[in-house]
Amino acid sequence: MIALVKYNAGNITSVKNAIERLGYSCVVTDDETILKQAEKVIFPGVGEASSAMKYLKEKGLDQVIKNLRQPVLGICLGQQLLCQFSEEGNTECLGIFEATVKKFEPKLKVPHMGWNNISQLNSELYYGISADENFYFVHSYYVEISKETTAICDYIVPFSASMQKDNFYATQFHPEKSSRVGEQLLLNFLKL
Image (cartoon, rainbow, N blue to C red; front, side):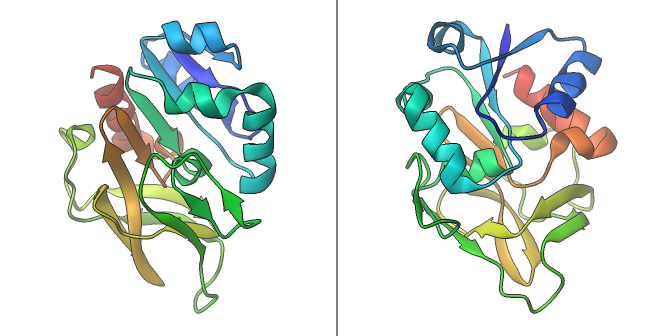
């Protein structure tokens, strides 16, 4: 079973639909037991860091997520919350990735919204995906490049398009909105 973390962040329905289109069943839950027993956990999100972390802490999900041993995929806000700190609301996050989330300087249009290519792909999530493919982004905050970065996007500054540490994977882009290449990435994660 695939579990999607419910924590009052948006976009869960589109992730659920994408997983089901690939032929997998999934459940949206904030139940600790179900999350621990799931084969894979997806931590999606569109929202604001401080209110999302507040909800996770109130439900005890911050500790649950940090201690998961199966493959976990953070998407967009999910990636940001797996980092140590976010400038959005000066928020202490989960601390899986040794990176900081920063606000884009408005040198170009912010939020960064639309299709962008990524480079330096270095993860099994990119099996069957070439570096000239485009993914769909919507975000005003970005994760700095760190030792856990597995792909880079360049918009205003180079930033972590994806990350990995141990069983934790994450993307800043939305694979569920990224057409064929996004479906391939989700499928690669589900087959881990």
